[in-house]
Every structure is written in C-alpha cells, then in structure tokens.
Image (cartoon, rainbow, N blue to C red; front, top):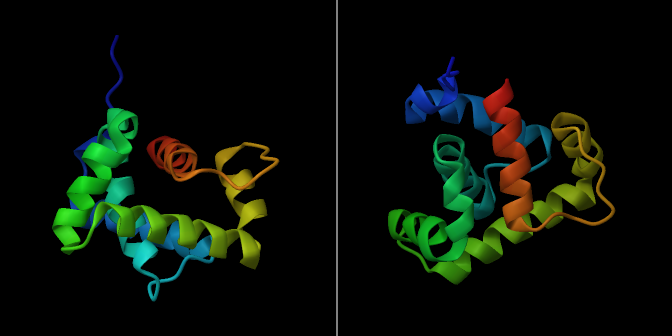
Length: 122
C-alpha cells in the first residue's frame, strides 16, 4: 500500500500558512529577504525533495527568477537568515522541531532538508 503525502497536494497559500509560523518560531522574520526565499524554497522542497540535489542550479535559480535577483543573493540571504536564527536562539527550537542534534549550524541544504521533512510529517 502506497502512502500519499498530503502536504504535496496543498496549494502555495496553504503551505505558506504552515511554513511562515515555523520560520518565525525560529526567529526568522519577514523583514529578512531570506525569510521569503526560505518560504519559496520550502514550498518546492516539501513538494519535491529531489530539488535539494540540484539546489544551486535548480532551486536557487527558480527562486532568483521569481524574485528578480541572483542565485548568489538567494544563497547568501538564506545563509544569513539561518545565522540570525542561530544567534537569536533558534538552534534549540530547530533541533527540537526536527528531532536532530547538531554540533554546528546547518548548511542551507541541511536546514531545508530537515525543515521540509518536519513539515511533511506534521
């Protein structure tokens, strides 16, 4: 018997309503460009986890086109948002939500992977 992931079937607005409160719990707020890029990235990764295998050429490229910016800007803003989260105490919340123990701040792809898995499970 094959299980269906309901989150993959949700519309963008419905996923945004799930994702944005999670990012805010992690102290990543809407005044950061990385907040908006992370929201867009998580929508894509929740629907298709294979996007993480081609994070720069595919995922960041799609987001850059959508927001009329560069791939390097998307990568840097996401990294900055994760750094801000860690400085503000989001590390503990992230680890609790995702059920992981990290010694270092996660990379962008690790952060997206863990959060997308958490969203798929909720």
